[in-house]
Every structure is written in C-alpha cells, then in structure tokens.
Amino acid sequence: MNRVLIAATFAAGAFLSGSQAFAHAFLDHASPPVGGTVATAPHELTLSFTQNLEAAFSTVQVTGPNGTQLGQGKAQISGNTMRVSIKAAGPGTYHVHWHALSVDTHTTQGNYTFHVGGQ
Image (cartoon, rainbow, N blue to C red; front, side, top):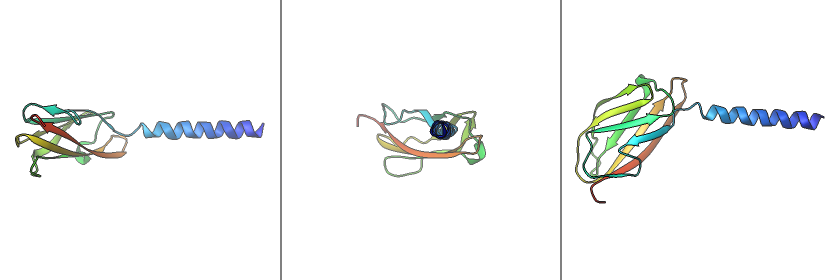
C-alpha cells in the first residue's frame, strides 16, 4: 500500500511541476515568422506569446544584416502581443532577441532570425 501511495504522490508532483512550466510566456508565433523569408524588409515586428505580458519588463531588440540596432522606440505591448517599429535595412538576415515577463511574474527569453530577400 505504501508503494502505491508513494507512486501516486510522485506522479502528482511530476504533473504539478510540469503544469507550472506552462505558466511562462513562451513565444507562440511571430511576424515576420521565425526562420522565415519575406520579400521586403518589414516596418514592424510582432511577437505573440502564450500569456499576457508585463509591459514595463518585456523587451525586444532587432538587429539588421550589418549588426545595426533597428528598433524604433520601446516595444508596445497589449495583452500577449509585443510590437516594435523597425527601420528597414535591406536584404539579409535579421536577428531578434526578446525578453518577456508574464503577468504571473515568470520570465522567458529567446532569439531567432528571419531573412529578407532571396537568401
């Protein structure tokens, strides 16, 4: 009987700890898309997350093919969406680094690239 109780307790703990991982704001999708290619340089980057964000502590940086920072001003946040205007830098690989603080105070961050032009 004790083995059954121990196994049930362990299983419940594993389930609950796994559920907590889903409480973080993870990147759900982006425009331009992660790893995607677009024909022309975008004027805005949009990131959508799995949870609502705290605007004061969530950021995004975009660098162009030559390493220049392209973000124009602070990211605008509404619910689970972060947007930032960016300067066009022509064809090549663009790098995005984001940091998100969800409303439940968990932080996540990540990087990705997208391509402009026929690369």
